[in-house]
Image (cartoon, rainbow, N blue to C red):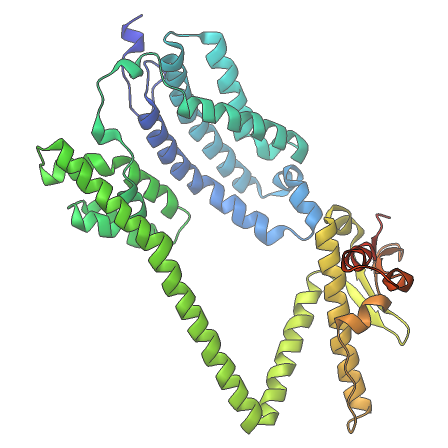
Amino acid sequence: MEDKLRLNTELYGFDGIIGRRDYFLNRVIIASIGLIFILPYQIWLITNMQTFGDLLGLHKMFFQAPILLKLWLLTGTIGTFILTASNINRRLNDISGSINTVLNGAVIFLFLLLNLCFLFPLGVCLLIGFAGTIAELIILFKLGKITRNYPYDFTKEFNWGAFIGTWIWGLFNKSYKTLWIFLIGFTPWGFYYQLYCGLKGNEWAFKNKKCNDVIAFNKSQEKQSAIFAVLLFVVVPVIYFILIFATVAIIMFATFDDVKNNPEKAEQTMTKLEDSMSKLGSLYFESHLITPEENKYYVLSQDWKYYSFKEKKNILDMAASLAAIERQKEYKKNHPESYKSFSKTTELQRTKIYSVETKKLLGEFYLDESSFENGSVKEILKASLSAYKFYNR
């Protein structure tokens, strides 16, 4: 039995035990491998999803995928699951202090379902995902009955400097493996590599610096972690804000000069902005019809059904803004010598959202003006919000 509970930190292997740090390290590597198989399928999903309903029925999308893509995803899922199961088995052996076949099998089966979530409806996926998250947190953070008695090893502590600073930290600590971040930093593997550097940082730095004073080494790494944390959370945001502010200011001054010195160019800019707004609206609306009495915008009923109240409100507001742009253009065309302002506020009450399939009313803004008489600010705001009426038909 003692032989079956020996320390085994390899990426694959069902026999033995594994501590929290090495388990996490292996999970990061497995997740990185899994990306190779998941990314092609995710790209296919993004390019083939047409409605919001597709997002809620991903299990149906899987069966519509090309056969080779399905085989690729299933192959990767099975391979990464075997690696995951072997690590979970060893971790549970450490937590239990013995080999509990029933417990290990039950938890591994849960993770099998978690890995195959793309085959199940959304509700089932959420339930499995919640149970899997709880199980993963327990496995990761619970001390093992066996490894808790092992001598403390400071080289297995997480190095925040290596995680945050990565390549800069690597240059200071002669850990040049961190320079790989230049190749993969802007890919989906970038974050996983940062985690890997954080987990291996102390080990690399202590070995490369050939330091014999553990206390001095730990203080040095803590100081570096604090410096990189300040750089990341204070200095970088400040620089980013300054750059954004300076860019916006330059654009505003340049636009002001254009309006002042070149009205025709300003008009072209406004036309481009209006065209951009119209293209944005085409993502939500199948068609629309502007009449003197009403602004009719049509959406897919299946998409509308799953929008939240806030999303529906934003869509209705967008329709009113688009209608204002069209009315402004039409008025300017028919009355070039006069000016009349159209805005979201002027158009909101006559803007309606309809189903493109059934032509039934799905959303409108109806404001009872009597609520404004002698009403407090709170009552007026409440009345304005309740004026948004939405229906699932």
